[in-house]
Image (cartoon, rainbow, N blue to C red; front, side, top):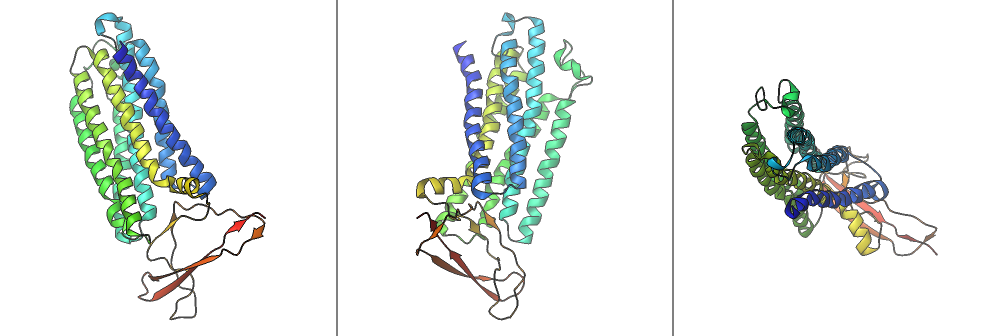
Length: 339
């Protein structure tokens, strides 16, 4: 019994850790960056699904999940299976939304049209799969009440093959998500050390593959065993861990302004600028050149009353997109402090 209680507690602990990361992200995006993007929207949707899974956990464990089927009532068994099914609907919504959030972040980082096109296609496929699998899971039996009835799994889809297919899909997309930022990060005007650091941070998302595999194994064991309520405890724990690990991995890359401010004591702009940005005027022409500047993970600078003398400027020579010319960017950094 202690082991099963630990599995239930594991669901709460994994959510608590993810909650801290998501809260830190919201603080960073609102107070330090001052802007929200599509990646934040998808992450928030994933977090809402994680909350829904958490709501299901105590209900199903109270009904009999984590107990041997011989120790609970038949009605309790049916209702526990019902709540296990409900949690899986939110699981697919959460996992798909997390990946859409990461792809949306990559899209904001991308500077080349070919990268943007690939990410659009990839993101569209992820979103389409998420919607389809959520609908399929919510209607996996006909009628739906077969799920919590004695005739289950009659009238239902092949649950085992359905799980195998989705596990394979998520493992493949986890790998793709882990390697996708490598060519994109080459376009960031940052040091090689910082580029490698970002690659490592993004690649940490590959750890969710472990969660996917663990969930698939425990899911298959529970679905093929008569003692469903006992074995589903492990499957539910793996469900919570995979979802919340995904939230953590999707959140970590955008927390740089928060940690930068904490450890350096500064709130100045810490954004990454993409190659191909064109600010100012072309050295070869009189007018301003069309272009774009994309700053990701940048923090807003705070101003106060007295100007100090510790002003800095920084110059960049970068290629102008589509013009074949050279643009000189001069960025001025002004530090303000209170008298």
